[in-house]
Each structure stands twice: as C-alpha cells, then as structure tokens.
Image (cartoon, rainbow, N blue to C red):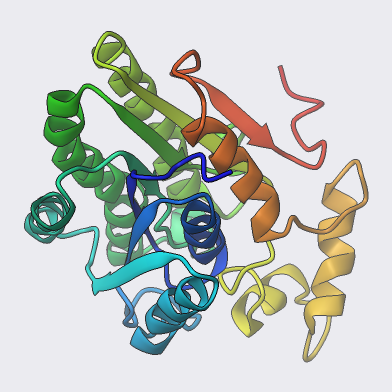
Amino acid sequence: MEQLAGQVALVTGGARGQGRAHAVALAGAGATVMVCDIAAPLATVPYPLATPGDLDETVRIIGDAGGRASAAIADVRDSAAVTELTDRIVAEHGRLDILVANAGICVLGPVADLPDDAWHDTIETNLSGVFYCIRAALPHMTRQRYGRIVAISSGAGRGGMRNLGHYGASKWGLIGLVKTVALETATDGITANVICPATVATPMVLNDYSFRAFRPDVPHPTADDARERHERLSPMRVAWLQPEDVTRAVMYLVTDRGTTTGSVLEVNLGTSASRA
C-alpha cells in the first residue's frame, strides 16, 4: 500500500548514503520526491563529497522502481537557494508534505586545534542548513495544515565525543531547534522530530580519512581495520548501522498520524544505554 500517495517530499543530502535510502523509501511509499545535494567538494572536508552523477543515480534508482523523483544541486548553507528550491517544489507540485533534513558533514579534530573555517562549515551545514530548510518549508506546511519534518542528528548529539566538538555542537543544537519547532507548530497539523543514529556505513564514514583517524596505529588502514575499533564502541559489538536502518525510523515518523512530535528517536546499537 502506498501510504504516502499524493504527498511531496524534500530530502537534503539525497545524492547518496542515508539521503538516498530515505528518498528511495519515500518514493516507494508513493511520495513524489525532490532530492538535493551540494554535489561538490568543500575545502574543509577531507573526504570526497557527492557528485552530480550521484544525485542523478538516486533519481534513476527511484525511476527504475516506478517512483517519481527529481534532483537539484543546492547548498543548504545558502538560505536564499533553499527558499527558492522549496518555493519551486510547491509551484510545481502544489504542496510540500515532508522534509527530511539529512545533509551533513563530519570532520574530526580536537577543539584546541580546530580551524575557524572547519567550525563554520560544520555549523552552517549541519545546523544552520536545517534551520534554513525548516524555515522555508513551514509557511507551506502551515498553509496546508499538514507537514512532517524529520531531522537527522547523531549519537554525538546526545553525548560528548572526542574530536567531534564542532560536529557534536551542531547535532545538539539541531535537537533544540526541532523541539522548538514542534512546540510552535503543535496545533498546525505539523510534526517535527529528530533521529539520532549511531555510526552509519555511508561514504561519510567509509573513506580513507576516517579509516586513518580511527586506526592511526595501522599504516594503511582499511574498512576492516576501522570495523574493529567501531565494534568496540558498540555494546552490541556491531560496527555500524546500514542506511536502511535509519530509513525505517524516518518512515515511522513521516507516516505517523500526528501523535508524535518533539521526540528524539535513537537508532543506537546500544550506545546510549549507559547514558541518562
């Protein structure tokens, strides 16, 4: 059954990884999906970001499965571009029902050594970018008195982690932002929720930069070397989630009848069990 038939969704960071998985599932449930991504390198990010080809591939996968999708290159740090994209979606489709604010970057480094530009890019992408997207979507959702907002945070948004001060700050701030949106829209037919995944097996994690950061003791570390370190961090001794594990949480929240808002759903491999 197409639970989302007739609905329109926007997924940021949709070119690959979690964003692609979310977009594919939304389209599979009947939604018309717009995926956007910066699809370009950032000077402060030392691993490869998505490409326009990745963005096109997401659309192709959805189309081959019989779904409806289109793509746009957009930098969520650019509030004007985000507003223009959101307005275009509504002009073309008449509505915007679902926002999955997924775009994010993760660069490692201790606070004492963190350059200004790395801090700014992380906060602007992971936190301000979500704010710009939500702010652009809310007038449309409020007018139609229906909306589902899901922001992808992180386990780093629930507890401190070494070498992730800027990333953790952005993801903690995201939770406060979305909870506030939930309160402000509680009587407007809109829900706003956050998902905090543990480490997910996406290109943001499975890259040479990340492998070296987690296994500096190995000359040329591989995914298998990094897996050992990640497994030690998980009470379940599972190294990382698959994108589809997070997607199931997304689908739960976007198909909810409107009874859950302002919540934080942890998909955590047990990593939060020792926290209050």
